[in-house]
Image: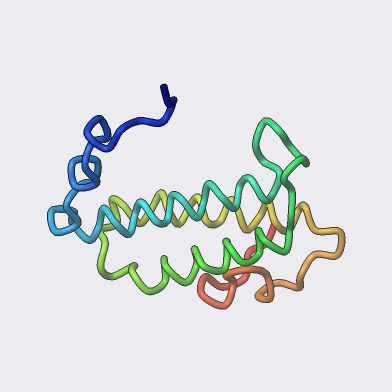
Length: 120
């Protein structure tokens, strides 16, 4: 006997995924933003594991991508969705500045070309 699941017992891919045509654009944008925020928080060492996964180079890339997404989608999503995402982005930018041994000058930190300088 094999421990592998037979093809008949495996649910179909279509059954396991939500049809992308049914997902509103705002939901996709917010989901991507939250995933970027979560990944950045891990790379900033803000999780229970702390410094175990800390990598400021990776965090910079994630915060930069999040800021770009927020800048590009700000007029496409309502302030109901955008406001908490902007707050989260600013918190990540401040955390990045605090975690850096040699902080970037104001306006040069990750995402600040989109958000403006972040002071902390």
